[in-house]
Image (cartoon, rainbow, N blue to C red; front, side):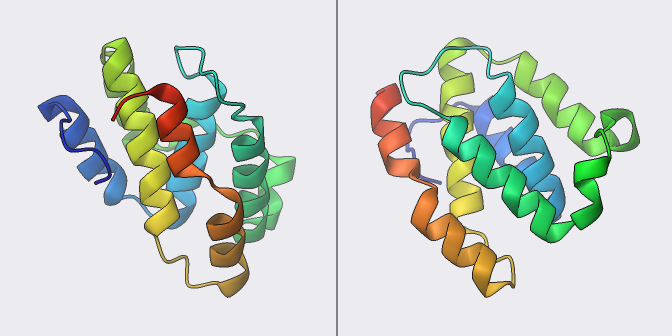
Length: 131
């Protein structure tokens, strides 16, 4: 984890997120970033574009399909738990979620390179001032 002072709720959600498959991590991250529940000062549109490109690399058919979270019970559950978080907890979880993706090995050199070059988790974290 990147942050030291997370609540138990955030830690539990990060552990659930950590246990997801790579493609489900990306699906959930896109979903949550598109509707964070708070307005970050950091422009996250680049993160969303990057994650959508990664999703296309992992599943080329995903651009033709609307993701129905009813099919993904674990993603629906994590998303519901996210909604229960306070504003500060949502900010901290978003940082931890992106940091988890940043550290994850997708077993694809092109994906790993794109994430390492374009997912500026530390800048995002500093912009939220959650350290």
